[in-house]
Amino acid sequence: MATLRGAHSSIYDERCAELARLTGATVVDGDLNQCTTVGPIQDKIQYERVERSLEDARTNGKMAAGGQALEGKNISSRHDRARHWR
Image 1 (cartoon, rainbow, N blue to C red):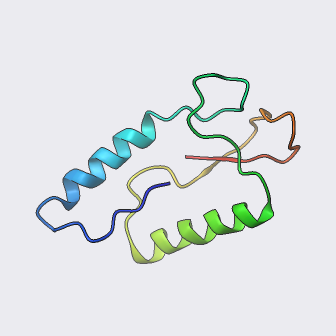
Image 2 (cartoon, rainbow, N blue to C red):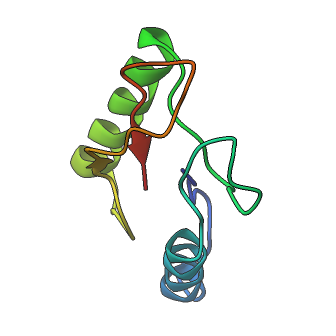
């Protein structure tokens, strides 16, 4: 998850587009995949922190890409309820 704050209005849209492009290029998977760039949310505290940040972006900012949990990916051998976000 990336936050774009304090960007001058003359470059804001360009920066949002670049963040969206980078988000789309991430590999969301478990630790067994060597190409993984974003792994699962590890615990309830981390999950709630991500939820608050996403809600803040929906309410006060702009969601350039993603913002939804990737459901149904059973990719973590250590965590039964691992959730992935993009």
